[in-house]
Every structure is written in C-alpha cells, then in structure tokens.
Image (cartoon, rainbow, N blue to C red; front, side, top):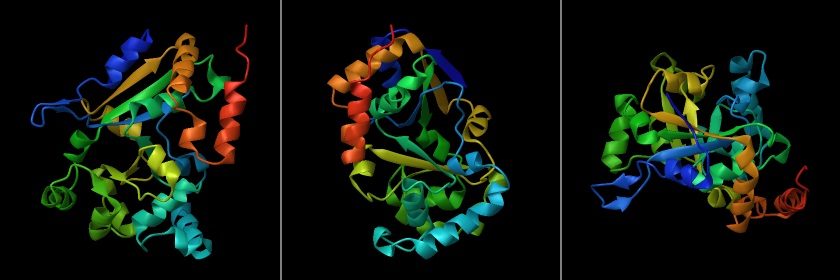
Length: 262
C-alpha cells in the first residue's frame, strides 16, 4: 500500500486531488473516499472492534436493543442498513466506519484535535470503485443495473437485510462502501460516506494491505498541522459548520481560541 509523506499545504492538495480526472466525462470526478485521523498510528478500526471483549457476538444484541428502544421516527425504513446508519450516527458501537467524499472534511478531522498536534496525522484515500470490483456478483449486478458506482442503503437492502446475511459474506472478506441516508444536517454537511466489512472482526487496513492499488495513506507531519488548521478555519471548514448546533459551535470556539503552545 502506498504511503506518501507530504511537506506543505500545496503538496497535500496535489495528493488529495490526484487521479481525480475522469477522461470519459472530461471532468474532475474523484473516485476516492477519505478518512482523516489525528494520529498516523491509528488503525481503521470500527467502534465495534474498539469495544473489545467478545464484540462480534455482542453486535446483534447491541443492534437489537437499539431498535427496541430507539424512536422509530428517526429511521426512514426498517432495514439493516438504515438501522446501522442511524446507530452509528448516534454513537452505538457498530461495524460501520465513517468516511467522506470531501478531502477538506478529512483534513478537518485530521487536525481537529489540538491535543494531538505533536503527532503526525494521516488521511486515508480509498478508491471505492476499485474496492467494489471485488464485490460478490449479486451486489455488482445491482450497481450495474442502476448504472451507479456507489451503493445506497436501498440497493443494499434489496440484497442483504440482516446481520446473518451479511456474515455469510465473511469468507469472501469484502469491503462495502455505501451512502448513508441523510438523517440530519451533520451527515449532509460532512458529505458522509460509510464502509462495512463483511467480517466484523477484520480491520479495514489489513484488507487494504492485501489488495494493493486500492488505497494510499497521506501522512501529515505534526509541524504542518497548525497551518492546515488555520487555513481550514479561514475556508469555513470547522465544527460550527460540520456539527450544526450549540455543541459544534462550542467545540469550534474552544479550539479556535485555544493558544498555540510556545
């Protein structure tokens, strides 16, 4: 898997928008999903994996009880993918991993935690079109019939609608990228994208390492984070916009007015 260490803001832009030219469309149309992390040593672990213990067995219990007690008004349709999306959005440990179509939003998440400014950050870029070339034929057929290269919760629900059905693909070790429903402004503003592994115990970066040419890591040196952060704030890419509400506003103001260490 390719790892790139950038040295400047300009180099970062070049790397994030690399390979975005689509010759067929004669337009710049990136086929990459992005995920920013404040520490380059962090893995692409789901909140379910980070729960620890016998988490794979606990997954169905977590989701069953979430469905039992959640307000159904927040779920557009009673499908596995709608429930997983809502549960992930509200903080339940799931096998879902959050991504974004926007390289700038990934930059935000790589530089939002100023307590980690002594650590190199990282932005993962995954070509989801190449990843989907490895999908089972049943899912690839749905994409082809739809004339799309991205799965939606509706398309997925037609093929897989329970955790046991998803687990049946575990031996194939596939990564599925999909667009979550637009539950609220946060998902819309963050240009949200999601992934799941068919095997809940497999960490996505292990899968990516075994499939070269799909992903790359863009390492952001610690001494560049302040410049990136200040330029993102000037470009209005911040918590106030990405997390509409008083909590997002408060997080933005706290970080924005925190002094830079000498």
